[in-house]
Image (tube, rainbow, N blue to C red; front, top):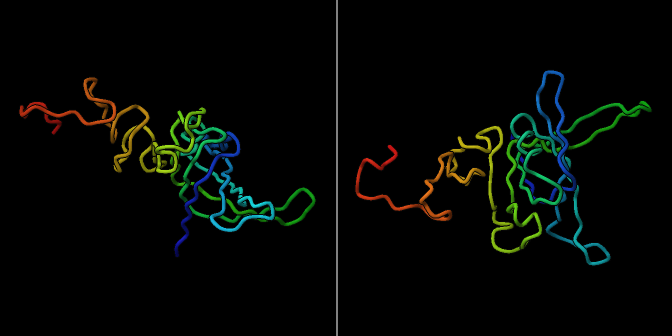
Length: 175
């Protein structure tokens, strides 16, 4: 069976980090996702507000780096939970259990810079969740918040946005 979902939108509030009785980190957040089709009677796009939950390292990452208004892409699985409310009524809710959370904007854009220019929707900085963390170990080669690439720090002499050229001396090779 296949249960995979991917959504992209803006956080409606700062993520809420809690801990289970055994100390496991869990973060709850809501993503506002514009529908690709149809408009309401006022000519505005309709928006879905999708509840998400992240666990362990992904929860800690989201609560530390994500904030209200940030563009995020969430991939994970859809989960339906059932419970009984305080009045004895049976209730159900759907939520996305996030495996990975990626930023769709840069921190500068989120702090009031050019929110829709350049890299906003093209996946600014991307950080893996439980499968690689945000500080190295990510085998997909996304840029890390420490300024490194794939978990390795760039040399101080290397340009920030480009690779440095190595001399023909084999002693400088990293392998």
